[in-house]
Image (cartoon, rainbow, N blue to C red; front, side, top):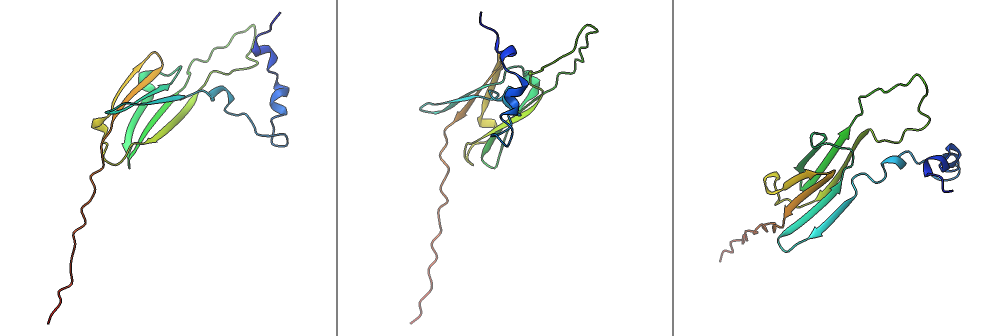
Length: 144
């Protein structure tokens, strides 16, 4: 009979990932948060970002210094206690996370469109060429 991984992942597994054996897995339950696919189109980019367990109100986006920054935070405020038992392991994510993508200085927040549906944030970013600054040539006046 196959046992669910809930019962096969023991606390001793984490012991062997300690610094003397490797790296702590503090973010193991959150390792798949904000998994992102970026698809290039002729006129722009489509970004699909997985945000399971988050609501639309939990997610913000902004453009700052040429970077698109997506932030998400959640907190389970339910304090569920049962007189017959207690949690021995709790893996549902509570906290905040963020990702950033360089979109260029020509892109503004008004250019970007976003939609949140079924735990997936879909973002459309248009392609814009940065306007090159034309260097004004100045010459030294030569007398004589």
